[in-house]
View 1: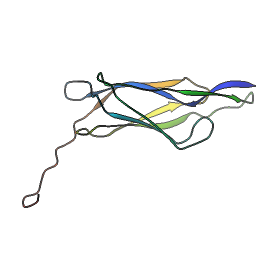
View 2 (view 1 turned 180 degrees about the horizontal axis):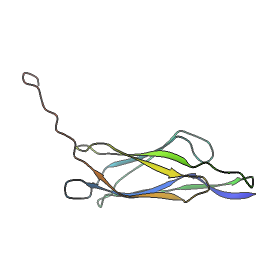
View 3 (view 1 turned 45 degrees about the horizontal axis):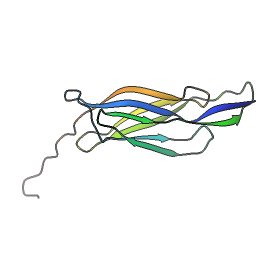
View 4 (view 1 turned 180 degrees about the vertical axis):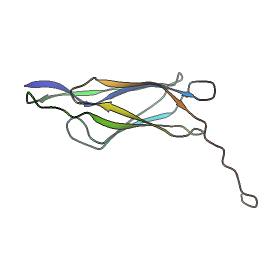
Length: 123
């Protein structure tokens, strides 16, 4: 039976600072997929947050043939957010080829990175 399946999930959200909840613009958001709905992988999809800290990675669907009664296993992949001056953050993204078109992890809060202390006598 022909069906429109999710090949790669879409992800939307917003990135803010733990210091006051201000939006973090210019953070890199990367979705690392171990495999796609079509079994191809690994795949890395990325985008950058806008001035309000918002980001979107669009889903990709494709036509395929499925066998009735077949079950598509849920998949868990990794979302990684990075920005200079902040600790890199990771979150899981749950999806399946027959499921929703994307995931909305909501507001992701990044903590400022700890300052690096110089040792005496070093430059």
